[in-house]
Length: 381
Image (cartoon, rainbow, N blue to C red; front, side):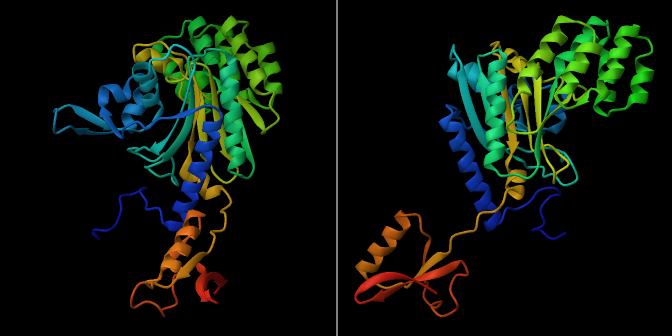
């Protein structure tokens, strides 16, 4: 085997793509900053107990594990940054009021999410801690739509769901934990035949409501239909009211999917998933996850989202790279001052190296520094 071949679904990022990713990262973090979100940088490795607290079985399967040579304890390479940010809010910042945090970093997955996905996604996201109402969900949704607009992606839409609908049906209908897990899997797969078979033993009202969930997909009209046909449980009524407020935005096309239970064991309320016409997988995920802070010993309501920066950068229109400036290498104080001035203004200036003065220079350079009438000036090549 060639020793320079990378593992499957792991890739190098080359200069043009890296420049686009870094530019987008800086713009998004600045967007978060001006909205009051403070940047945190959690570590890549943590003890497994801390890393997986409150995340459920799915995250355990996605996490690479290794033994710490200092302590002998099992460590994990993070597969998601959100639980780490929740830990920081709960135990390090320990604030009483609302806290807004943002982050950006690589995570590692044992398996790719799809055939075209990387096992080393680059996550960037924002979280609100300490507020349990729909207004913080609305703030997060608006920030997400602004982030997607900043990326200038084609044909973006936002799918909304709410885990409280199925959870209320299961709890009110006396569904056991084992059957609930099977019904959840069938709903995720949109397997109506399996749903019919699994729900045979349930009360007719509960069975009919669960079988209706895969059909409750579409535009804002889905909410009115759900109000008419689903049982009049207080939890469901609140969930539908929340969705009604969140669909009032005109910033981005919005759809409803009450059978989408992504992160069911992780989320506690409304869920978001953003899609782009060119990709089968979601480019952003989020929602309310009050249980994560509670799992760390400090019950803090939380809502937020994660964007996948590598996919965003691939889809976003690439800004043309400004041409660099080629400069000779001579012991001239005026030349050194001119180069310093140009670099301070953001220009790329590349000086020739000895022996390479006449090889055509850097392909990125479209201009050069030349001395005219005793002054160093920039001219086109």
